[in-house]
Image (cartoon, rainbow, N blue to C red; front, top):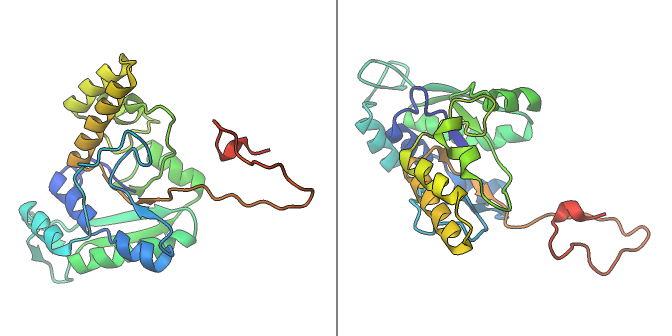
Length: 246
């Protein structure tokens, strides 16, 4: 989803982060651009036993976003029509992408932000440069997706000890005492039911502090094959994934 660099203005303010989450029109993206093949994310551990179904859910709601921005001090617009705070600062950001196909997707967000008085510039970079910028936390707003692990590892992605390390997958700079304490207990817990409960508590806390405006995911694997020489009865092993296909 949209990763907020919480170390810096303007995303050091949780109200701004939540406002952006409410301006993210995922319904339009899924319906108009994705042929309804994806589902909205409400969790950092989707399609697993670790998902917390009671997470805070951020739906598209421009009016709620407007109220949150006003609470954060963004109440008036300048001569160009951009929203400014009490110091006269407008929010102008750059969102990078590594393929032309992303521009049409991010344009939907750009237009929604413009309606709200926020200026978003779109810029194409190479995949290498974009990923390097994200891993080195050289951004304010970024789009980043991650693959899931068989066993969640919150310490590597959400622990405060790696928030300022580069490279680090804690690109948003999550520093939260509750998450740190839960991750430590999780690291020494071997009973699966308790491990699941701990991750669900971490998931809930992440939804509260909103380091990402969560996007979407596909609850499936796409597999394309060419029946040139025949194929076995089964494609996937009992314990493998699509990478195990020979």
